[in-house]
Image 1: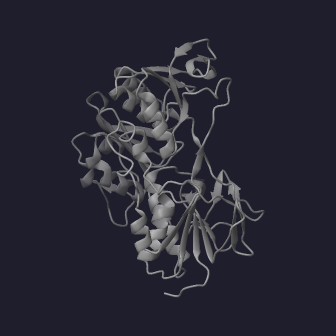
Image 2 (image 1 turned 90 degrees about the vertical axis):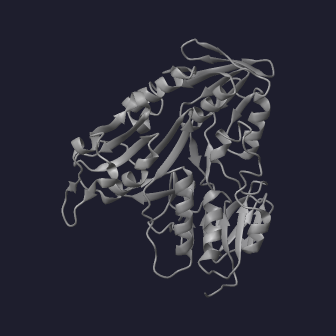
Image 3 (image 1 turned 135 degrees about the vertical axis):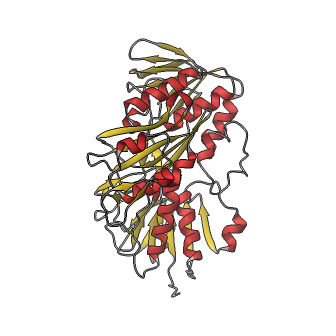
Length: 416
């Protein structure tokens, strides 16, 4: 394969960046690959941070993505502790905070996302934490050894997983959520009610439709005060109120709308500049969407890396997927939808084993939530990909094995 004097530079050594760099080598690229990150840690896996790592079940070595030796063997030049502050697409250079200049032939932005911060009185007290990095997780794990009461601000997936982890440690856990139901903005009210009851059944105190207005304490947080006058005793607080894509590398010709706007090939509006993973807004069935999960970062990084090599471009068409482990629940979500016309349940919520389908007005499955039913995963992914109308009665029938539901060739209907 043709090599160039200038390297391919990847900014961001997270999931997307590491898999992109490896893919370049696996596809036969022989030129230089430079992988840059402002973090000083070797690349590591993030999903275990809120679960096995917090619980002490996995070590730092266990969650390492790749060793120095494996990256060296692939001739991937890893530059840690280097913060890129600007790029010049015309000159094909990236400039670091200490004025180091990196030349590139093609540039891939895998800059990830940053946590939203809670700006209230007392938010600078000790004991108030955010979970994004390995350093964050290590600080939380060390802090929680000697405390009993934990408050979690935000009932999203990170907050829910942490609540599960802390309950396993015997902590007294309070979740504070501004919305009426946890996760309802993603999963709908019925599923929001299900997850509310799940946390409550595990002994978590869940407060909804309220928000923190102040933290109190001398130097260490001792309690959280809410809009409605509640006082929540706590010796530690974890804030999980969402993320913002990292788009700090700007250019007047670089289109940004929440994330870097890319086409189906991962190309930004700048020539020879691509983006993948958490920092990108990418086209999915007529909309630009933003996905923050592990599976997307891996697959998007790999696909876009192949397009960096030239040749026939490859469209990124993966079905979005994420998972979450909470208490005795393995939760899987396939597809993407903000609005659905109807929802269909197969299984029994009381048995904690079911699949919940989100259908549009044409009866097409746009998304599905699986609770403790991994056996349905492949069939659900296939049905979403095929985008054909499915009979609701068929989906809701507990006797129907989804593996046996097939779209008939050249016909706009489904058989069993």
